[in-house]
Length: 310
Ligand code: CP
Ligand code: NVA
Image (cartoon, rainbow, N blue to C red; front, side):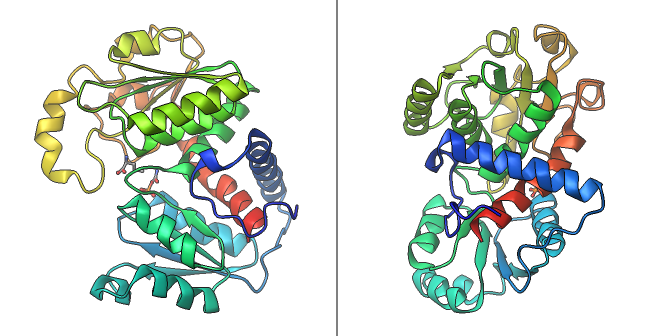
């Protein structure tokens, strides 16, 4: 495996150049192809990945765990509930201790600053498995999926309908770096973080892409190649569910607004989905939906991250 990314943290797609993201995607493609042919590719023999979760997960946990095993290494699930972190042990100490045992850490948690702190004090690569701010592993898998389905990334219009959340932020970063035309449609009060928007717009300008934030879902979806949505209430926002359900009325991907996209547009969703809220059952189960190929690609994209940084 290539040496150039060894030791790097994977915290935000903003931290990588377009060429580096392309290297992740090419490596993912190669590993996926090898796996389908039944090849054994084990560059991580003898290496252990610690996986800290303070939030629930199906895809991230299982795909990282299986990915590590397929690459010849060992995954170690560390529940946030059981670590001394929960009893107040500082992140800086946790990072330095875990660095003496492990070869990499994947963490899913609430506060993005905790991941930055972990990376600051760890001497091994730290991978962001989702924070309240970003979800870069998901977007790497999304880029892989789009590239597979459309044979290109640059110039494609990627519409995201819904909450200006971790998914919206990482889509802006990933799409911008790949020269895509990213349009986010969110209601007032739920628009993406303006600091992230500005950074993504700078990334887009440097890479021939575009990042726009609008209010109208129809405006965003019009002529889109990729239509994306995510839950209205993310993990940690469960008590806001009712207020959000009202605020997001009209921000649903359904047959009517999907008809405004290009006829061959694909529909993606990071999952888990709330059918009848941000997306209809008809659309997520329909012919344009690629959500299970997308979920599969979490495995291949993350194997690329692991193989390149560990
Ligand atoms: N999309 C995603 O990250 O799924 P999980 O929450 O199941 O890991
Ligand atoms: N925005 C969602 C994504 C889940 C993969 C959340 O943070 O809960």
